[in-house]
Length: 338
Picture 1: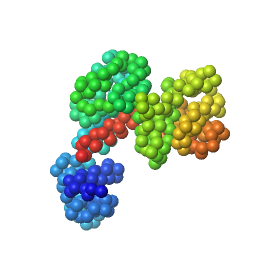
Picture 2: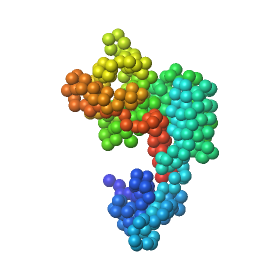
Picture 3: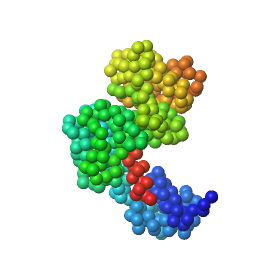
């Protein structure tokens, strides 16, 4: 086993401190010492390094009676970098821009009525409002090849074509990545939603389109070609699962009947993966809430011996967009905080 070099140790300590400041907000030097277990000189040195690097700044003083350097509160310089999350719909493009702390600073929605790369670049530029961007993360329906990052099934997005991701990068002049929309929604559920604190779960996406995202060991599992979770293609009684439970098919269906249909797809996932938790997302999962989730759980329990909890999404707003922002932040922080 190799011993960490001084430079490596400093980098590890700096990132530890930055992650704590992101998680907890401004902290004093004594608080950083207590939370990190580092010595007073080490914390003093890392604070000075991070200040000189433009990553942290004094944001105020603590409420302690004792005044002095140790009572200063240090926080992340929010404007140090910005990212954009993009949700590419068939008919619209939604963008949120956030600072490096994750706080939203701009957003926009535009009709998807033009050439996709140009329209995406336009929406991102307008939402950024003149701010330089570090990273852009986009979500779109369809299979995304994990090896190339390109959308394989372009027919899901009007006008999408091979090489479009690279064109978006060229137009914006920043790093841009593409991910399947349901996978991004699963990132949001894992970090801030119904699956927070869980290592294994499946997000069953019930919307205009039907799909699933698989998270095992705290990581997205995309499959060799990006097709993991395409549960909408399953055939049940002569119809696909998508035809049974998409937003159109779910209209006017009694909750118990709808739960039975959803349970069939959930059962297929539980049988193969045994995730312990199924989250119901999309417009149907949100509208049905915990009442629908409880009905689905009852049906799954009758079909499967594997104990499985079913929860409704708890991510407020656009889960795909929030997952895109979180993904962009992870990439940006790895570069900015290195």
